[in-house]
Image (tube, rainbow, N blue to C red; front, side, top):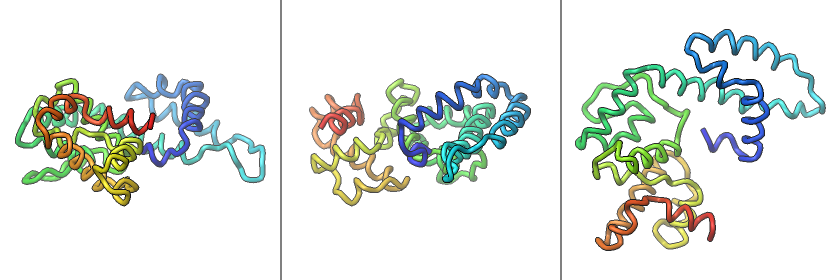
Length: 214
């Protein structure tokens, strides 16, 4: 979702001027309020005048993400069974290693497919969620550590600069490649026991700092 949003400054402006200024989150936070609130909002949005021949300023792609991706997450939060299932996986050392893939696709080896998961509405941020669940000890098992690295662009850049991954892999952001990068970073950090003791509690954060600061 984040990659599709594009320029972060433009996203911040959209979030501030379109969503927060309209009270979008407060108005739609009640489960039974979303339909009526969005009906009124759509009514105002479709009647806006454009100020240039390119019809710029509509932020149509952002609105599409809000009304599908954000609404999808909103629905999942209300589905108690989904949250309970995630917590059950987090507590199960035999299955927690597949938690990221489950959140994405609903697939777990040996289990029937789950029909209500994030799908394409979330990609790399799922690794961030996994990392924080692990750092907060909500996921208490080391079996998850190979998926607990958030391979965002600065982390991939830093990993490439120090030779942990090659340029071809660093330039890829598809879900399978991100999972492979997390795995490779984990293996590099855990090759030496002393290095592992110093670095593993921070997961990808030192690489993030390196990628941002150079």
